[in-house]
Length: 98
Image (cartoon, helix red, strand yellow):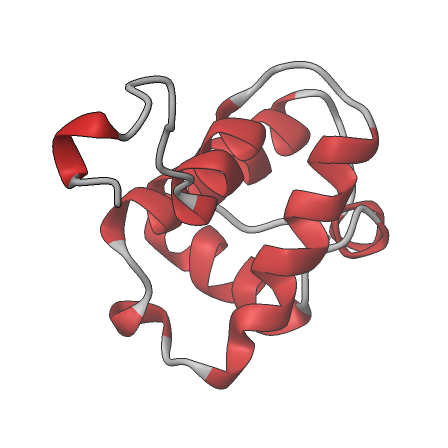
């Protein structure tokens, strides 16, 4: 019978929220980033203030980066975010976009 001390040390815990935030903070565009945007956009059933602060920060960072690269609101929505998440992030950033 194995005890806890006999468990392999290489077993790492998986934190899906950390993975999601890391993907959103990343400057690289790709499938992982698109999936992260869709996941974050689907979290509109929770009020914005109830989302983890690190996730809100990651979303603001990503949306800010999209705005800085000249993306319109429609293009941000197409990137995977929901209208509620975009509106809240823009409000937090103190920015507006057409």
